[in-house]
Image (cartoon, rainbow, N blue to C red):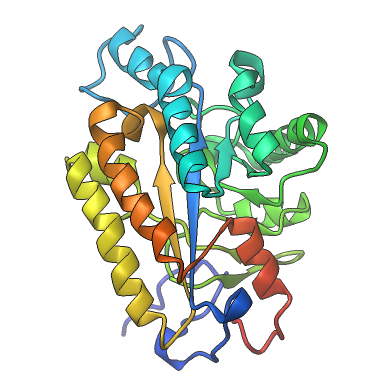
Length: 296
């Protein structure tokens, strides 16, 4: 006799080819968003992506490599987004407000969406107690509301680290959507103990950390992945509306040899004109306005 495996209880199985059809604004079939991760790390402690295997702390090489993103890389990416007139979702550690708040000013002026991303990527959210996790979410939400004039609607956990309670805590804190899950190419309703929250697809393939740092894909190869995914998903979206996210970290794709290729890939999307280039908050808002039977 086989036992039933533990289940998260957030959503049931649904084959994408059997779901009701709908469209994005203006009848578009593919929604594309750029997720720009602006992160700050503690010096001498905590985890972080590594250019080389971690050294004993203080790990100056890997710390300073990450710090390049806020000092140089983010400004190169801002110039790129501006030149192509592309909106962005800024996934920010609230420690950015203390370390380099000027980084956020131009994105705020552009009207880009600000998304909660914890206080620092030197801490894994799933390691906290439920009370500690609630405090983290509430303190980050409060800080962002004070700085931005409006509370964030979306959240990506540092290191996409969840506890068994994370979706519940986010919904209870007033969040409309989470980016933590990558199980679909469409938004999915998540059940929570207090109601529901949207799961907007967040990429783990078109994401420079797993692609470039873990799988050692070149800058050219990563750009090709973006172009190929875009072209293929445009064709697939004739049958179903789809979401394509692109996750970027300035300390990785902000380096000259990579941003040159990224420019080509993003120009391919910007000049094509067939997709709805938007933000995850706008995607969540659109599906929330559809009849409940349409988006499951």
